[in-house]
Image (cartoon, rainbow, N blue to C red; front, side, top):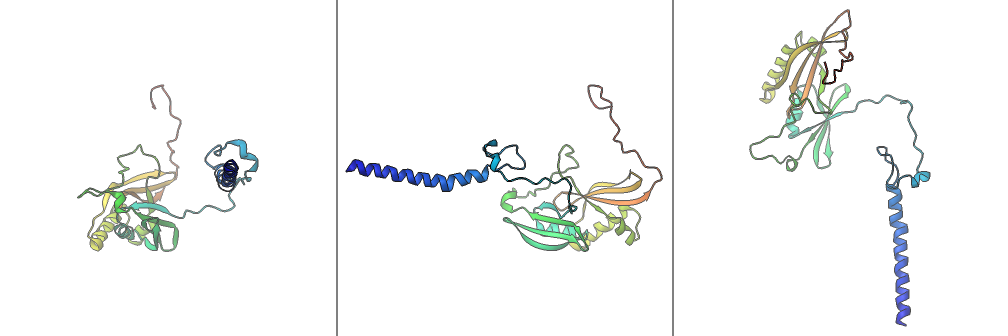
Length: 242
């Protein structure tokens, strides 16, 4: 009698294990074995290729992809909103990005100029007493890759203010910042002139409230002859670029 009870118990255990495998483990494996768009194989390689759904490949885009926003992390979103208000940005929406306070800012009538500000929580900043964390100074770290700066065309703003030089406009912007918020602006690179194609530009850089780079572009004039791009093939001597 005890042997029979033991056999029945073993059979019941096997049935429960089979049920677990069928209803839990197999679906889990099937879901996570499909091919990722960034990898050559799923977790189980090619063995499940016959049941993968077909992937539609885009030969051309049926509609242009419009820039929605550029995201910038900040240690203090209130101060950052003040800074970008100097450049014409207004708060469009406030929301939470996980545990962080966030906001969309945009210039009225220009939705493609939208910024997203994300406030890094203090427990993640982990700032020692008396220290304020800053963005990496990309003017000094030229070897770093990835997103480098936000560029704003200020040409129309200069004309409306009756100004011709980018330096004059930036001085007025700094005076406005001091008047409104009691804070001066930090210059990253003084205005300089550069010819690109057939256009003559003034370019300058500021640091934002957290040290991220902001470029100002002022188109001054056009030239008749297009300038060389400077992309000519360089001669290789086996040691370095000439």
